[in-house]
Image (cartoon, rainbow, N blue to C red; front, side, top):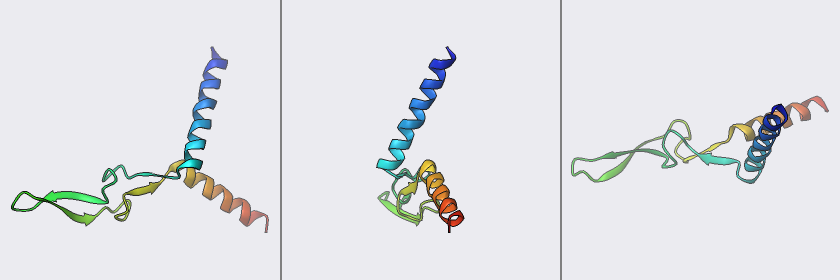
Length: 81
């Protein structure tokens, strides 16, 4: 039972690692990838308001796993110089 749990955990981590390598950017969770909040004007037509503060209006964010990999690479690079 324990080995099955460990194998499942390792498979999940390997899948997330491959996802971070293949697609380092994911959609922003705050604006759902729109880049800003959609508001309605007085004629009830949609318009964009201010850009999203989390993704700065791009609609994409760097995944946590990719951010950790970049940080680890920077620490390794700084330590080997």
